[in-house]
Image 1 (cartoon, helix red, strand yellow):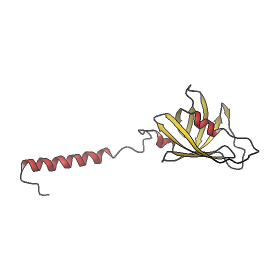
Image 2 (spheres, helix red, strand yellow):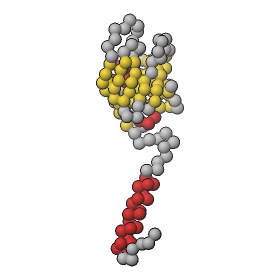
Image 3 (tube, rainbow, N blue to C red):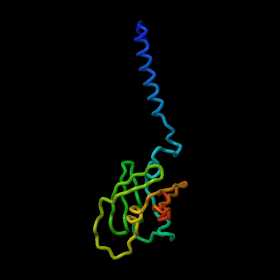
Image 4 (cartoon, rainbow, N blue to C red):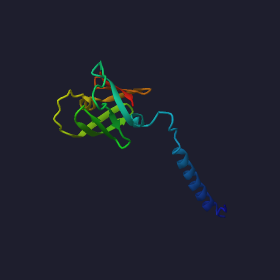
Length: 147
C-alpha cells in the first residue's frame, strides 16, 4: 500500500484504518459465554412448564403445553385450548410482555394459566436449562425446562 507523502494525509489514512480496526474488534464478542447484554438470547427457544403456581405440572393433554420465544421479541403459547401470541422484552432479568392475540375456541377441558403467568411475570431467572418466572414481589409463578 502506498501512503500519501503529506504528513496530514498519512495521519488521516492511519486514523481511518484505526477506526475500522476498532469497529471490527468491537463486533467480535464472546457469543458462546451465555452472558449477553440483554439476556434475551437465553430466553429464545421452546420451554415446557414443570411447575405452575407452586405445584408440579405434568402435561396430560394431547398436545404438550409449551411457550416459544423468538429472537424478534415475540412469543407463542397455548392455555390448553386457545392459541396465544404476544410480544416480550427481557433486559438483564427484567421481563415484560403484552399478549396481542388469542383464539377464542369453546373448550371443555381445564385451562393452563400460561398467558396469565406471562402477564404477571416481571423477572426471569435462569439456571442451566431451567427458567423461573417471578412476579414483582419475587414470588415464583412458574418454572420451565428448555424443550
